[in-house]
Length: 233
Length: 198
Image 1 (cartoon, rainbow over the protein chains, first blue to last red):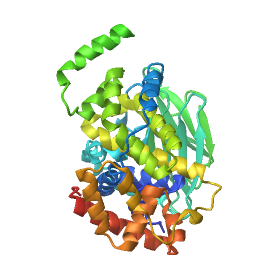
Image 2: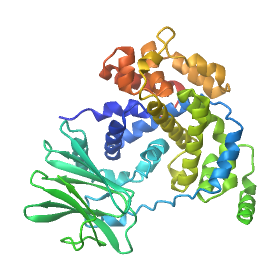
Image 3: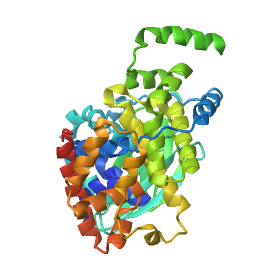
Image 4: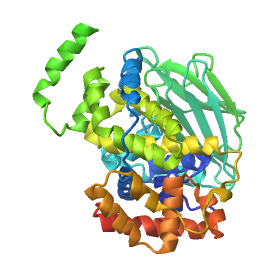
């Protein structure tokens, strides 16, 4: 049925996974509060190993770094909005900050913010984990012209797909991104998000494709703009 | 630029104590404070460079990786939320991930089994001779000594040599499920030995 993603926790904490497995484990991690708690201890342990290897760096490094940062622009803070949950419980704000490693490293605390929601979403989370851990899982990724990317995992056995959107540019005021599943009878809304999001789509067997459009806040019943991305299922 | 550096230095002045709060420094780095960046580097450079060097071995390549890590820190510091965790953990996690990616990339064409010294096993001794001896290090060494050989090999080949668990399995002629279990048992034992809260 599903591979045991849980067994990847120790290799993950040691950075001993291949990139694809790492990604699948991180996707699983977003759903699994118990894993986050245990991983916090594993990561802290690995960091102790890392901290035991200190060695004075070459003297030139400091000056080169200071020169480089003086001409290097910085990223802006990420503002995570919970407001987009309204009416669309499938659109979970993605907790993972751009580098999932950041979340893993700083551990457990960050995830606990969302813990109140965890019970509500437990069933859904299990469904997401079932898809990304399914033996027949297939994934397809697409980069947006405007920046950011979406990745979709599909399992025929689970008749479901999970879509992760990451690092999209914030839409203009009053707008959100909306995800649609399109089959013979037309598009069905799957949820909205602002810059990052994840959602599960059930009953993908009949679907032809998944599309993302820009819509007014709160989402539309039907797409009102041409898709900025389309993924063939 | 100079004016802003002066202002920032002024703002930084009160917290000029011998053990800087790294979370505070990183937060200030996120606001573009170059002095805070220098202080952060001074406080963590040995740890970051040492870890990169341990995994990569080639000192000049390790220096490049350390430089990439700090530039990434500079660029993304605004996204660090001190409420969520610890600056040093973040830095070391970034450093390890980058070091492992570098060593895998560099050695993609190499038969890595040949690098494994079958006679002496994973050489934690080398860590010992090159590192600054700290209390933490003594503890790490003692706790590693407390693992079974099989657990220690699985953990150190992965963490200090950048092997994937599948590569560890090949190197140790074991199946991957066994290696994952050894890694898990090893980490749990280390965690408990080091007194890391679970």
